[in-house]
Structures are given as C-alpha cells and as structure tokens.
Image (spheres, rainbow, N blue to C red):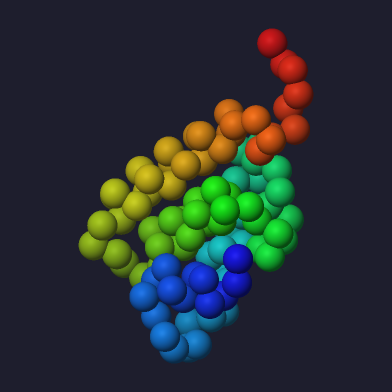
Length: 95
C-alpha cells in the first residue's frame, strides 16, 4: 500500500495532507499490531486484507467524517476478523 492508495481511499488528489495521512496509517498499523495482527511492520508489505483495515482506520480518523460511527464499526469488525484469521497472527495453537 502506498500514500497514493490512501489518498484514493480518502478521495483526495492533493498532497497537502500526506504527513497526517501517513501518521494515521502508522497509528492504524500499530493498533492492529497491539491486537496481535502480524505483518504490520511496513506499509508497503501489507497484504490486501490488512491494507483495507488500515485504509478504513485512516478514513475514520481523517478530519471529521460524517459517517465516523459506520467507519469505526467497520474497522473494529475488520480488526476482529484479522485477530482470529489464520496467517494473520502468531499466536499458534493456544487452546
């Protein structure tokens, strides 16, 4: 995922907000990592599902979106699915 992907998700064409967008993406990746999701070390190495969760996080936290509650709920659902998905955690067989 690149900054261009994030700008597209936000429907932006200008680069004026790139630093804020990148900071939000890093915060989203850190939030996923704290939840036990692996592969969040580098924005360029995110798989498609994890990248979509980060995009949703950025959309929810960029500015003051009218649909914040919907976006936050969508991000929380994506995070919950990633936390339990095979190949997205390193928890192993902890039964």
